[in-house]
Amino acid sequence: MAARSAALDKLAAWPYAVQTIGVDGLHFHDLRHTGNMIAAESGAGLKDLMARMGHDNVRAAMIYQHAVRGADRAITVAIDKHLSGHERVTAGGEEDPPGALAPVG
Image (cartoon, rainbow, N blue to C red):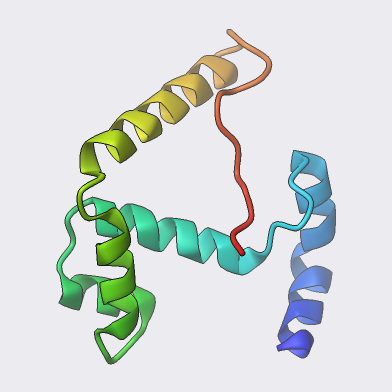
């Protein structure tokens, strides 16, 4: 996996991008994890999650579905707050958006 990581570092300037946004330790795979969590929160079924993730068994999809079960409302409110803050920032209304990307694990 180190070879793929080194290739990404060169092609996408990943370390520079991570440093620029101020989230030391953020890995590219963290973005995949975030996307899968949001997809699971949307109510996507197992087959849809599996297709999105590129998996042929249900184990990984079940992990994401289990993680969001019972927390739908709280997650939705948190995402809405984050996105609303981002809209204010991009419109020039505020310098520091609420919420931030954070590495997992």
